[in-house]
Length: 120
Image (cartoon, rainbow, N blue to C red; front, top):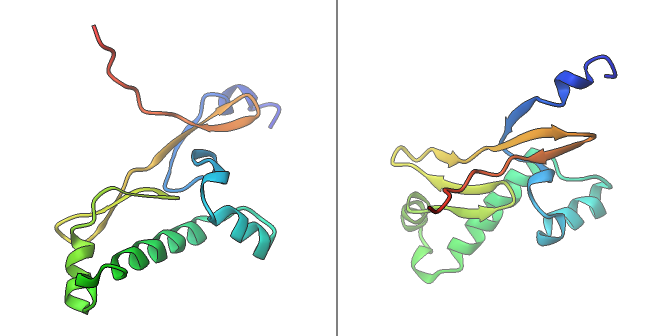
């Protein structure tokens, strides 16, 4: 690691989920997994958590109480802000995720935030 420190300092990687991209205190997922497993959540835990949260929120609406109506509601889902980031479904019913871009700063892994347009 010491020999490759200069190269590692400039590496960036796209990720679907990262604990570095979310404030751990803003989500109940972190205390749940830390309490149950003694560690931060993995991508599988985070994806399952978001899936459950999406289904629960949709099923709480009275118009989504049948399989067909739940399927239709899922197909309309756009920009659900979960612990894995924004989740939407495309016309092909495939999930659409916006990956996180991570980079190394010193000894830390941090999220690269999208650039915003500067006003003139």
